[in-house]
Image (cartoon, rainbow, N blue to C red; front, side, top):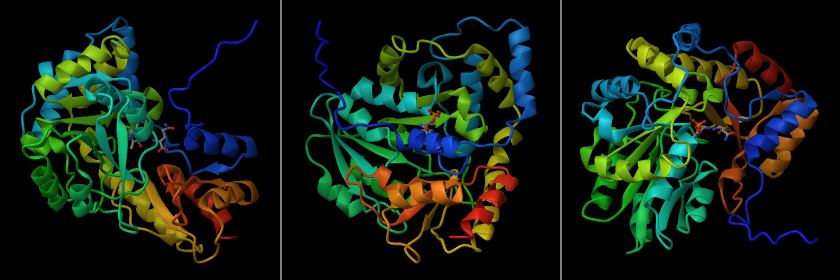
Amino acid sequence: MSAPTIHSRLPDVGTTIFTVMSSLAAELGAVNLGQGFPDFPMSAELVSLVDQAMRDGYNQYVHMNGLIGLREALAEKIRFLYGHAVDAESQITVTPGGTYAIYTALTAVLQPGDEVIVFEPAYDSYIPNVIINGAVPVRIDLRFPDYRIDWDEVRRQITGRTRMIMLNSPNNPTGAVLRAEDMEQLRAIVKDTRILIQSDEVYEHLIFDKIPHQSILRYPDLLERGFASFSFGKVFHCTGWKLGYSVSSPALMREFRKVHQFNCFSCHAPSQVALAKFLGDRSSYLSLGAFMQRKRDYFQELMGQTRFTPLPSHGSYFQLYSYDRFSDESDKDLAIRITKEYGVATIPVSAFYQSGQDNKVVRFCFAKKDETLETAVSRLVKI
Ligand code: PMP
Ligand code: GLN
């Protein structure tokens, strides 16, 4: 009996770098500042609310678009933060995480041959998501080392086949954030075109230095042609929950739900009941940026004792550090070597470029207990 031939839909894709580095860290007992997840506890209040929801019997399917009470709480948060009303009924869908929300948006709207502009370094799911839908990624480098978007280059790369621009702010892996000027450029570029936008805003509340988050939800003309995707896991320190949501225009959301209903259908019910209550208190999300900014500042202060050079981080869980002062190894080799020899795992930033471009920078996750950051740096100072 011979095994059936497999024609891979993603022939060039291996195992995600996050799993590679986390597995290596676990195998070697290294401090894991690679994959982005907190090692401190999530809100005890939110845990109690889930417990209560389960005890109260919220253990069956909720509506496929998400618990209406949660969608209403999200609509209220959007109105408060971004000054525009979205309709909880027709514009918000709860999803099993931000990654799923992005995949679903692309699957709902892309046709074979459509071109999708992706900025690199790019979160590692984006380009495979484009390819598996038969569309064509058009890669544009963010400017090194500030990782801003070169909008003139975007104009040059737009063709009659351009169907989507993918955004991510605060950005993973760079910690860069979009500014109001960027949004004005984007609005001018897409006006009167068929270009859609997928805006990954999973680090929405984790933005520092009093910089306002440039959500596409601030701009009705962008939301008309856009999906904004979010992750409760990322902002509420519970990445294992895998719960998020997408917001769009009623017309685009109709298409999104056609795909969603036959994939996940409906998400974990008790967490939605709990979040609906939790979000009623604005401090649940208004305090998150300052909390994570303190982590960034503390880590940066500690890292001052090492030979790594910081690049600015204005948001997310992450800060990039350059090592070109002390090594010319590839970033992958360096990341593996410091995991093995010094017991600290990081993520090599070349993994976020299809070309493997290597600017000699590695990504550190600072969403960790102070003790974890201290232990890591006590090892990194020896390099
Ligand atoms: N986008 C970016 C940029 C991320 O860093 C993450 C974190 N994993 C996600 C999407 C996905 O979030 P989730 O775990 O909710 O799928
Ligand atoms: N977003 C996380 C990171 O960038 C990882 C999530 C994942 O492992 N897919 O580290």
